[in-house]
Length: 207
Image 1 (cartoon, helix red, strand yellow):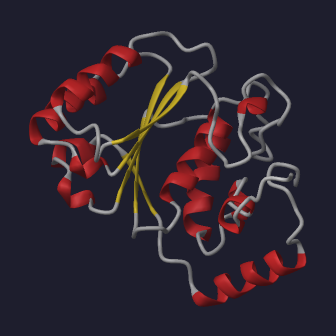
Image 2 (image 1 turned 90 degrees about the horizontal axis):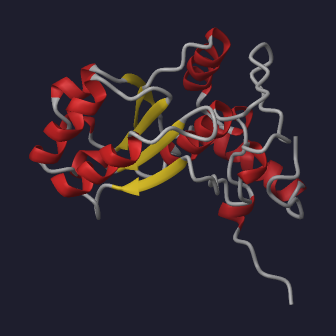
């Protein structure tokens, strides 16, 4: 019996080009990879459901590709890091960790993150995707600030939040900021048209 895959998962953006209505942000991210100057801390802010975590997963996918094409801004899709990507977009990779700061908001939780960050990655980077990062307690944010000031080699933090003003100014100042805007109605219509035309497409098999 086939497992039903919801449309929201089946058509989750897989590459930067799949992000509808985010042209400015996509250009910024492409510029980061073309210059090969990947920031050690990115702050992705935008409304709930606008695609912050999805973009964070795409960035982690690109950043850890062992044969990345920086000219065309494309991961190879075949290296040992790329093949770890699951059909829902998550990286099933020991060097890419997703943390929900709503549930892991205390200083001891952040100390655990700091401890993991000090291990050398097997891929290019050890990446921490932190959702709802504004919900960290103030002591936790102060502890986190220390590792942002002097991040371990080959470590990247991607912070996602709906409320960037809930973060300490010193944390925001140490991050490269990317803003995710609500998707315009016209872009939603184009995407729905694409979904209707390609409704049998399975995630991860398109290019």
